[in-house]
Structures are given as structure tokens and as C-alpha cells.
Image (cartoon, rainbow, N blue to C red; front, side, top):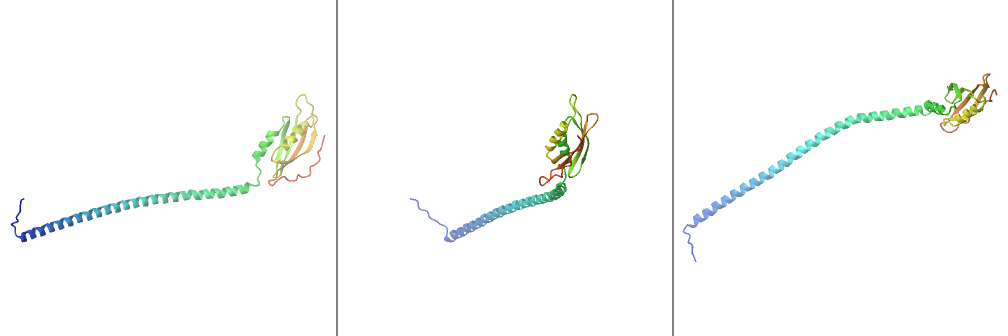
Length: 199
């Protein structure tokens, strides 16, 4: 067994111990300062990132607000168009669609009937027509009857009647037909049917 003997006086040992304690305290302070610097750096980095994100959000919000302002103009135009469309629809609610009426009439004219004149009013129409006998057939009222039946099938018409008919020397039959339009709220009562003139 080895025995160690310390020949240094106890004052030196105490002094070395104090110096070591000072060094440890100094190192502890340095480590604490480094830790605090690291925490501050991390906090500053987070603050910087948050500021950058906030700036990005503000820029995006400004862009969205600008887009909303541009779209507001189109929204106002859309509202104006809807308003004008309502005015037009209200104005046209009672109007007769002449193109549809004329298309319907053109679909029902028999081959042996020739329209000579058509006059329209808001309530109806009057047709002046001529029935031309086809080759090999005798002149008669059959084309006129066919014309009246076809006219009664036109959806826009409510009542159809023969106003007059006259047979000419050449065998042609001239006649007038009157129709009354459908009412928007249902069938209207037709005016009293005038008596037919002629053959």
C-alpha cells in the first residue's frame, strides 16, 4: 500500500480550490451567456419568420381586396343586367311572338291555298286567301275547310271562323278567314262569328 504525503501547506490547497471555483463560475457564466444568446437568436429568428409571414399575408390580403374591388364592378353590372332583363320581360309579357305565329301559320297552309293578304292586330288576324283547284279537280270548299281545320290547330289561335267566300268565273274561290289569339290567362270568348257570305 502506497501512502501519499502532501507537503504543500493548506493555504495553497485552499487557494487552488478557490481558483478552481472561480474558473468553474466563469465557465458557468460563459455557458449561461451562450445559452441565453442561443435562446435570443432562436427567438429573433422566429420573430423574423413571423414578420415575413405577416407581410406575405398583408400582401395577399391587399391583392384579394383589389380583386374584390374589380369583381364588385362586374357584380354591379350583373345586378343592372338582371334589373334591365326584368323590365324587358315585364314589357314583353303581353306581347305576341310574331315570328312563332308566322312559323305556325306557314306550317298549316294547304298546297291549294294561296295567301293574298294578312293583317294582324293584338287580338287576332285576318287572312285573305284564294283556293286554286288542282288539275283534274273541281273547284269547291274542301280546301277552305282544310285551311280552317289546320288554322284551328295553331297553338296561338283560340277561335277560327270563315268571314266570307266567293267563287269567281275562273273557278277560283276567294275567302276571308278571321282568327282570335289565345289569351295569356286562358281561352278568351270569341266574338260572335259573322255569317259567311257567298257560295
